[in-house]
Length: 313
Image (cartoon, rainbow, N blue to C red; front, side, top):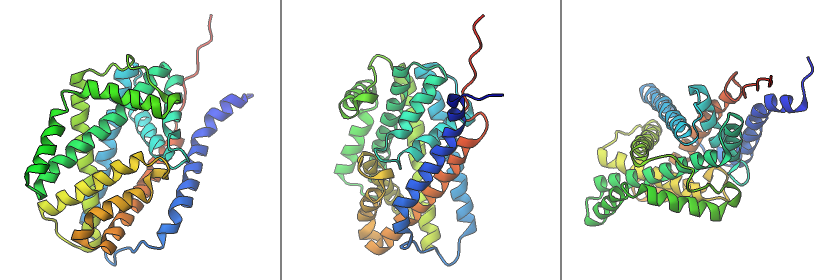
C-alpha cells in the first residue's frame, strides 16, 4: 500500500510535535534544574492526593474543551481527543511565540469538520474564560487571608463582571484581532450564550482551585508543613496570579521565569525568598512532568487521527 507524503505527515506530526516540545522544555528548563532540591522524604499520602487532584484537573479541563468545541463548532470530540488537544495546547506554549499549540488545534478542528472562524472562536473563548475565572478565584480567596475593604471591593467587582461576560468576550475578540491578526475570530461566530459561559466559568474556577491545591500539596511535601486556611488561600492566590501573568509573557516560553518570579515575590514575605523560589521551581517540575505525560496522548491511536473522507459516488 503506497502512502502519500500528506498521509505520512498526518501520521508523524503528533510524535514530532511531542519531540519538539520535549526539546524546547529541556532547553529552557535545564538551567534551572540545578536549583531544584528534592525533599529527603516524601509524604506518600500527600503525593497520592496531588496525583488524584491532577487527574481530576485533566478530567474537568478536557470536559470544558469538549463542551466549548461542541457549542462553538458543532464538532463532537471524544474524551481522548479532548485530552490530547489540551496537551497540544500546553506543550505548544514552549515553542517560540507560544501560539503554535493554538494553531495546531485550530488546524486539527478544521480537519475534523469545523469552520476555521468557529475553531478560532472556540480557542479564544476558552482562554477568555480561563483568565476570567482566575480573576474571580484569586479575588475571592484574597478576602480569606486579608479581610479588609479593598479585597472585598475587588471580589465584588469580579462577581459583578459575570453578567457582563458576553460584552467582555467581544472585547477579548477585538484584543486578539489586534495582537494576533492571523488568529482573529469573527465576533459573530461564537455560539456560547450567557448560561453556557456561566457554567464553564464556574468549572474553570474549580479548575483553578485544583491547580492551587496541587501547589499546596507540593508545599506540604517540600516543607512537611500543615496548612491553615489562610496560608492555603495565600498560596493559591499567588500561584494563580503567577500563572495568569505568565500567560501574557509572550517572550517567555511557557511563562518560564515569569511565573516563578511573580509567585515567589508574592510569597517571599511569608516563606522567605529562598524557600519561595524553591517551591515555585518544584511546582514547575511537577507541571513539566505531567505536561509531558499528557503529551503521550498525542501518539495514541484515534487521539489526532483524521477520519478518511468517503469517496464521492
